[in-house]
Image (tube, rainbow, N blue to C red; front, side, top):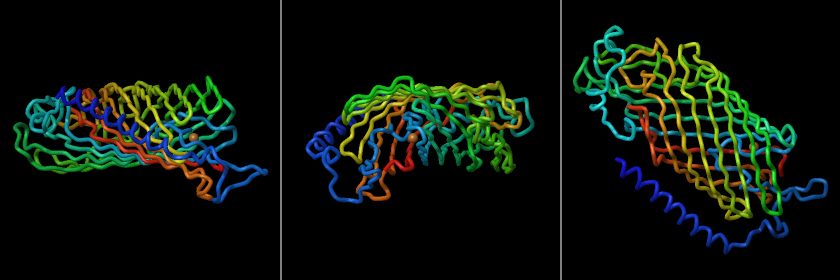
Length: 398
Ligand SMILES: [Cu+2]
């Protein structure tokens, strides 16, 4: 298992670097029309000057948020669709199959709750996969030269497939079922404050401080029908990972560093999610989260750049518990939450330029990633891959 984790990142990184290098030589051979006079197309003229599309590499990979600022009065709108696919359960770094979980992992409700949760010494229901979709609507507004405000409104859809084992013990199957939940997630507002801004001909460097607040607008009381070990199908409150919001006010601090020299850009960001309350209305608080990421991008032409990114995340266990989340399943155990994960991600950023007429300035970006390391407080479903596609447009920019 460990071998697999060590081999995969090296191979991926090597392939990505070779790929970027190869396209780099090809890209050098092409002329860069950005450095020559406008030729044809539907050029926009304002106050007697050509309005030019912003640099495609002004923005980080689309999976990174709040890494750039705007000029005072500028409004940027954005939409991102993010999908995450999870399958295979890990305890720590080791994969464990559903029967192994049913046979060996203790049920914390054993002896403490009515049948069927209380009579089974071990877990009876095992998640086998999960899909998480997020539609993220965003707006950014340049307040002053140094301060940009950012608002995010997520809409979340989740589905989780499970196996139910028969009766209070053993590894015979009763059947399978899928639970679903969806709704508006936690709405957040963040201020990006410029600490250092260095600009030189064809180069720039920025360091920003992020101060954000997340409101408990997402539901923590979603329910759905489940299949129990005795074959009944009650509707019950869904376990923690299927809820939509945190239920607490959360502080979102961060620091971003970005730099560009010619057509090469890179950067790094740390962001935290710190729960400001000990407990939500349902009796618990999710664990704090920390995310560190670093990326490098190359601009092949004025309309396209591609990126390689590494992201590391940690999340703590749940503090407290919801007395309505009672089931012989790992996801109902506050201790089987959180862990560590490192992802490698490849991305492409595109921007429509002056010759695209009224589409000028519209951005489209994609980024896909897969974990190269996971160490989970499990048993817990591991992440298989992630995908983000996003659209962004600063109003009136060209
Ligand atoms: Cu923006």
